[in-house]
Length: 349
Image 1 (cartoon, rainbow, N blue to C red):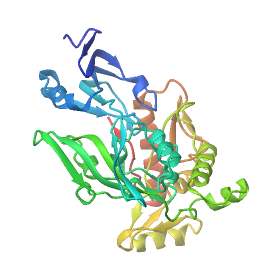
Image 2 (image 1 turned 45 degrees about the horizontal axis):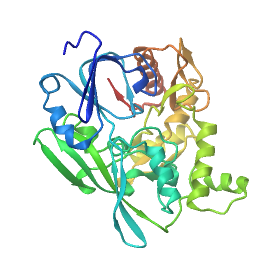
Image 3 (image 1 turned 180 degrees about the vertical axis):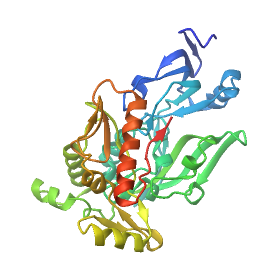
């Protein structure tokens, strides 16, 4: 196929589109194109797709829901999207169950699927955009939970070894908004994720206003009511990607040495901090951005949300390059005032 002319080819289990727009494939909704876009609908054809000469011999990008990515340019090669769908129970232990979820499933749909069947654990992670296959890469988290707490293993195609592998939780090397898959982006193509979900368990309601929201709802804590409380909080605090282009939190909360956090708090007593592993402290990126007067700032159609300072938004016609330029301005101003370098959560293309 000639990658410079628009065309579509349907093969058993996958579809190839030439000169494809990616504007509808990223939640920032910034314009970008791929020379070849391949949607994989059946997991057994992934090896065949990755072996195609054009895919093998050109830059390759694996794309899920596009909710953790900012395109600042076109992609000069193949983009492969895993569009496989299936949720099934592998084992039922009574008190808990082992579930296998294909990478193409929508994350929020899976959270609601789990809640509707009486499982506990994912309720704090409701309304996070993206696919199940992308969740381990970013080790998505919200309201005191991280997805790595519930992952037993990740199945992936190892491009280096040329075979399907199954990585247990420890092998995934999960960390705060990080994983093996994020550190080695050119190696693994995630095909499915296995979760162990309990039918009863401790609810996390002591984080970021969940208890107060439950009280306002006049509801007793349950997985379903916690999910509703989180959904209400997120809807009020975070801009909806369906209404305005964004990728959720754009910056990680920095983790700094305890003595650095104490110095920051002495200089800025209102700066929120939280415990982090190995005696470190996590400091609030949103607070620092807002303290710099950047909440709600706008540069053309690229902006910092006036709902939440961690979220960069596309007001309509911003390019990815413009959004990234604004992100770099935020980094620069926060570093100059606080001496802390903010790290982006999304992958920057």
